[in-house]
Image (cartoon, rainbow, N blue to C red):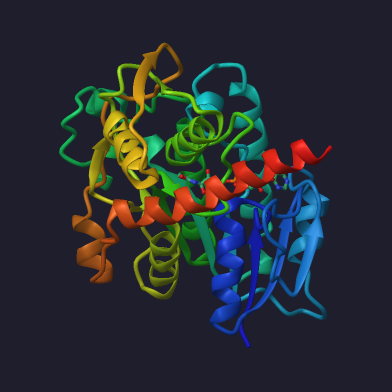
Length: 331
Ligand code: NAD
């Protein structure tokens, strides 16, 4: 039986990844500073610890005897949506905390046979993302580097950290650049939520409160592509089992404006609401994934329609918002 460590297993993608690995028959140890918020972990063991501490990483990576983990999935990071990454307030935490975790995992390479690292589309240069008609970012566009956030700079540093570790030690690494992953059980409130969950929450709250409008940051013309969680995991597992080390985009190439995403959610909810575009943190103007490389190297690319993923996501977020409110009324 293969043994995997999932770092960041209390987070959105990590918790789903644990389920996926268990379905595939792995023995899984999860580690995070917190438990998953919306469902019980399926990990065989779950350690609560701060991975900025090297001694904790060592403990998380230690199996009995001289046994090594077959696979480590390093997803732990200090991250969030535009409201967390682009205000400037969290820059030092993002750079310091995530790079500390990655330095620990890279230096403890004697404890695993293969490592997956979750990088991000945020590494791409901002000057290639100034138009809403982004033709799709290719992996080779990354250099010369000019990410628009400290989050992106940390990710590009850590990509290089793991690649150089792999060159020195021969230990294989696999690196994915995720583009906006969304789905049920993703953060939907509190300041770290991303657009699909935030819009779903706003629409559900409007339904509950009888409000006639929702607020969207910026003019709403900014574009993104969003990847449904199941496809992100499919990409991760295919990449991990392949001979290609990456970095490779794992993203959807179905680009949508944020206003159109909001209209899609209203349509799913059966509500007609006004969109009020207000000032707010934004990030780049347009971003899309070019999937040529993943098709060439893995013979596969994401193709699950945004509408279907948003139907599932809205249903889950609405349920959270409504049950939370009912809890309040019961008090
Ligand atoms: P998430 O915030 O839900 O998960 C990250 C987890 O890391 C959290 O559970 C958090 O508690 C944990 N963590 C942070 N600091 C820690 C510490 N010091 N010690 C232990 N655990 C710590 O985020 P996610 O959406 O699941 O993303 C997973 C990975 O994928 C991250 O590396 C993220 O940067 C990357 N990524 C995600 C997206 C996306 O759209 N979700 C896009 C690009 C890249």
